[in-house]
Length: 131
Image (cartoon, rainbow, N blue to C red; front, side, top):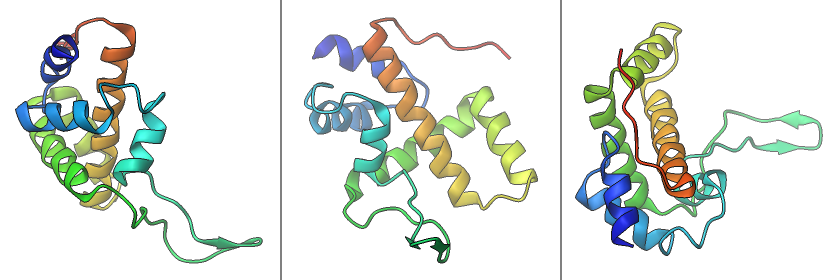
């Protein structure tokens, strides 16, 4: 557990609290086999409301989400946008395309979840890309 904690807190944006919430929520990464299911659990994955062939309204996240974990991931995403040039470039590009700010932060939080799961599942340390 300590090894996984040290790996995920090396990721830009993931700190002490968010790292420990990952460990507890995923039962040290044994409760979820892939990051997509964890994104649904956190409330980061949007779902469309459809009935038959018609799609009604915008996509929304689930109301059954873990609200505390989602809040921590949003804070981690804002920190990562500030300090990680790769995510900052992604954020600015999406904002310039006309996307809503909160939906882009949601996408960055999803990217952080993918990074965390990649580091743990591959058992390799996080390597920061030079820009």
